Amino acid sequence: MNNVNTTPSLSVIVLAAGKGTRMKSPLPKVLHPVVGLPMVMRVLNVAKSVGAKELRVVVGYGESLVRRVIEPLGATAYPQKEQKGTADAVASADPASLNGLVIIMNGDNPLVEAKDLKSVIENFNEMKADLAVVTAVMKNPGSLGRIVRQKGELKAIVEAGDAGAETLKLREVNSGMYVAKAEVLARLLPKVKPNNSKGEFYLTDIISLGLEEGLKVVAIQARPQVAFGVNTQAELAKASRVVFNRNRRRLLENGVVMVDPNTVYVEDDVEVGSGSVVYPNVYLRGSTKVGSYCVLEPGVHIISSTIADSAHIKSGCYFENAIVGEKVQIGPYARLRPESHVGREAHIGNFVELKKTTFGARSKAGHLTYLGDATIGEDVNIGCGTITCNYAADKKKYQTTVGNGVFVGSDVQFVAPVKIGDGATIASGSTITEDVPAKSLAIARGRQVNKPDWTPKG
Image (tube, rainbow, N blue to C red; front, side):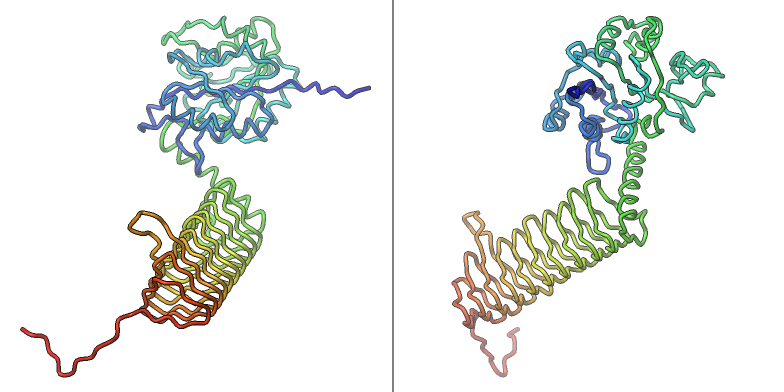
């Protein structure tokens, strides 16, 4: 007998049309970032992670900006022409054209995780439901709609503004997430009427409509985070704290040592190897990967960079899209700009800046140096105050190539394009404008003249 996949296809409709007036920001609410990612992106990523085949986002305020974020993720935008309520928003996404299971989510609920959606879907299927509202028990329900049950079964959703004193004591609330069979959603939505003071079409009404029709309508209880919506800057900050805590906990459980975890800021895709030590006020962003047995001192800021095992990054360093080899020492106060690659056992000292530069194994640049658009070989010594003059009058960038075993004295300027052969020595104070052969001494400076018995004239 052939195995037949009976799991219905999953579609997700994300409501993201609101302006977010209480945010007091020109940015559409759902584009406000939580730990580096726009809220709506977080919601879509979670939906994709549980196998959603169709992602539909209802857009309104800031439509063009929202499209730029959602469309690269494979989502389709559906404009809501007028803000006429949540049921109207869902109807704008053309649910009648969907099949299988549909989950309706809010674009400003950034704390929902894949395990939450998986649990909701499993419960829905096990209960053989037609329609469900996802609920949560909150310590302070506030203005969220209350879930009224009778003998454990869902009876109604009562908006806080319409609730009596006893109903307001209930702590189980409507999270704003719904699950429905596609055909049920398509049939019930047109029946929603604007019978309220605002004259809007409320999505909550599909619950009472489903109960009236005798459908299997249930309330599926989830974690409180699922009901956390962001409407103010304070709530946005709170959401970020929750995600930072999740990420810190993940690293701690994997054997990372944090001197003061509450002062370490880690984004979702960051990885740190076991045995590494992270000091206070470190920010790890993007796709950063840090190996094992590394030390990140206070004030280090790393963006989408790779740090190999046993590297020591000292205080105040700033890296962006860089690669650092094993047993490297960098800093304090060094900067690696994009496309910089530091070889194993190299040393980059204080106030050294690299840009689009490959810096060879065991080479050293102790302090006060700028190397841009350069290739530095292995076992090279770069003296204090050395710079590559890579940007020319024609507004083009040119390359500096320094071979293996080269000794560069202090206060040297390499005027690119220029090549320095293996084993060469560059005298301090030189401005190098021509290639230097291997094992040569290059001196390019004015001859010193001493004038005895000289005094300045008045």
